[in-house]
Length: 433
Image 1: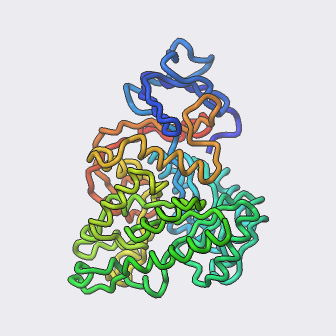
Image 2: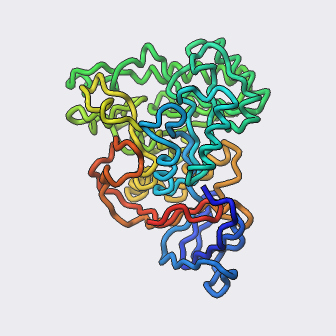
Image 3: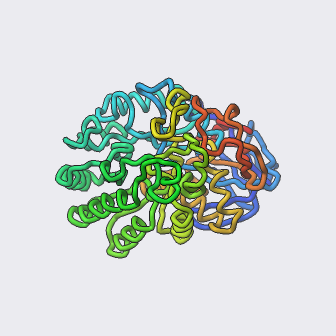
């Protein structure tokens, strides 16, 4: 992250400024000083630079608030062979992400205030971007006894989630939601019936042709339906971590129309890839939830465009070679994604399916609002967490060039558009492309 001493002032000019929070877009520049945005707009000129400032001509590139990724595995503690906070935040900075929300799926799990403190200290000492830890929803992520939300929240946890594990017991889930409501805490849940969803890819014709066991859409929908009924019962704030089916979208639409405090996310993988991309048993595309049929992917994109889907996450989940170079049914789930999330999302913009402002809203503004973070605004006085990128610049994804410790990208060899030129955290440049 930024150094202890205040960074030198920065001035960006000749930029296309986009603030997804207000929907405003304009040509101009901005001045960053003392970790905040000091000035912005078309009146900002190089001559206005504060003493000692670094002045950068953005050459018409987009400048927006930095991305906030609501779901990423950072490796520490316990899985440093897969990822470290240093490598995860380097990858994040290279992808324009200025805040990583880390999952609780570590060893030991983030179910104790001391572990929250450890993650925050490691992020302060070795990280390039902000790390906001989620804590476990239940002790040991075992789904049996709820965690100490109050103490974990005091330690710095921003939300509560058991990672890619569902709480099977409805009574435990009800207690967790009731307890969270009393602390105004956010419950983030991975909705999937673990028995029904035990297949290794999406259930359907393609799975049959590959000879692989399938997980039906209903595995997600049944658990989500249960959760939403418990939210109505308790009045808690609830976020469905990743939705992938029209069944889930229908349930969420009804819940939102009923005024429940529910939000949801979709991973960049499910928005831009489908089950056919698995092709000849490509294990880098073995994900949980599984990639769905193309019709489901299109429905997700439509729901994102209209705002039913609130946020886009990378679902960054590094897996080493030993766990991925196996027969498909035996390989681990997961793919890296934090570094390519923006460029992959821009596919939806270039295709005309989603506007750029809505894409940034889902990657910046909505995550900040849901988590109660001060970032995510391109406004005077807001934290100077900024990304500069060229949305049209093409590049080929080369796994060896990515900054994550593991290289299990589903976009291996893909041609993407959207090159990050600079990432700024608290007024300090943490990455320059």
